[in-house]
Length: 63
Image (cartoon, rainbow, N blue to C red; front, side, top):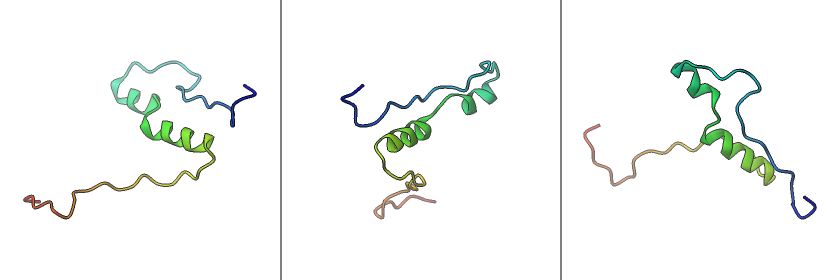
């Protein structure tokens, strides 16, 4: 580990029993935002809010 610029980060589920309900599973397992936050933290960059992604200016949909 001497060659690493930062210590590794663990992105895992909490240290408790795994839920058997589908409604709770989505909150239990780490998702893309938790992985992104861990990567940015290891890289020493600020963790901001996720950007809002919407349709481009050329979008002419009915909504």
